[in-house]
Image (cartoon, rainbow, N blue to C red; front, side, top):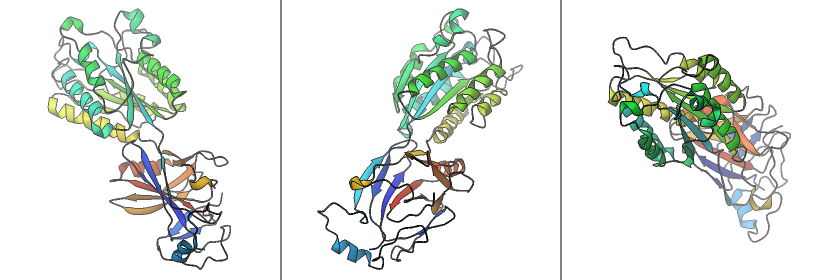
Length: 401
């Protein structure tokens, strides 16, 4: 019998559902003794299986002969690959936004607190992100800080542990409506202080509790124009926030930072440079610093920042779909191929140590439930033009575990 494969095509749509389509193919599969997965792209080639892979006595029969002799009404036998379709999803992506609504964003009490240069373009771009069809497949929440009230309420975890907009599937108008509702109408309506540590703690607490019943990929997105202040000496520091997001990163909650710089006017202080330390500690490499001074350019820069964050947040852990027709999943009979418009097709190697470039591994080699792309592979796919992953379930062993 020709060693056929059931192929699964996965299309990345920035966090949307990945559709798996399984079908038989006549490609040549080789299982390398070095644990790498390799495929001869010739669809008409006869299979050649190295030591350690299974081979059938009738392996020289053509795919057409195998199809003609198959009883499609019968339950497939152990060595027959059936045409069948299935669906699978990546880990869902949950993004919790902590959004600075302090007076420095637009109160107008200082030249660099100009609402038209900071608040208005940032709000415009934020609403566009939450309502953009490109955000389909993401789920987000929104928490405003500082909270209403004095220091006793402003500097408490409890003030921020319940978001103002709960986890909501995007796109959604709920976020823009919430921002419009709290937008200050006069100078006296602006809230005071920047309790960064407390909103970070409260939001992370919310994410930890939410994730217990909702497995997925989690990120905090901190949008602020200033350093922590107006709480107490222990919490009014970048170092305190850094410690908090480092602990969250250890629990696989990333922290992205969007820093809204003051406009380039005389005496305007730098209040965003040290935000870089928060982003690095949160596992996201760099803070996205947004220049102000030109409202149109500010809105575009913010939109670009959230678009990059949206792409970076794509989960690179894929649930393994149920094997077709009641067959038992076999961990050594899987091939993963990456395909993109600008680079063609590339077989991804199985490497549980992620030492090889372009590799993947199982979440648990002894009892796998997910295909996990190694970091460099994940970066490659996120940067690609119209990326696609093909996961093939083979009839022959192609991975030496």
